[in-house]
Image (cartoon, rainbow, N blue to C red; front, top):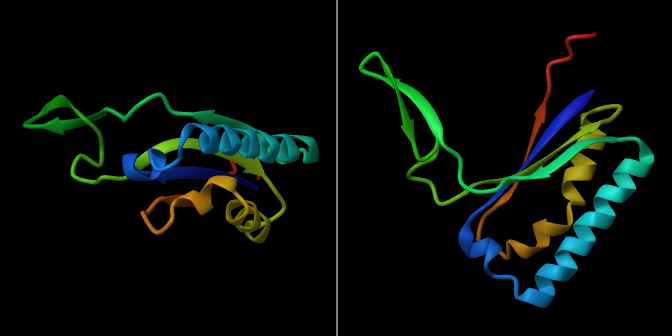
Amino acid sequence: MKYLMLIYGNEQVWNSVDADGFARLVAEVDAFNAELRESGELVDSQGLESRPRAVRVVGGAPVVTDGPYLEAKEYVGSYFVVDVADEERALEIARSYPALRHSRGLGGGIEVWPLVDHDG
């Protein structure tokens, strides 16, 4: 079953890592992704360029806003998709994501979303 992992945080979390620490974190995430790719579990992984834009219907017309979480300080910064045997394995992968330890109580985390299986 496939799971979408949304990595979210805020500027305070992401800016709390100095340049050397950030380079180490990127290397750890690259190794994390390589390990999942080698096991055949990684389907896709992408960072998101910037804050999202949202389109909502207001007064019968679509309106573009700064994002679905305008008042929230946290937003999705990247995602990855895994194809694993069960939810337990998906949660195990989420718990091992290297960037989680950098939140230092400032927020952020990973949301684990099961994807609809149109083939099963």
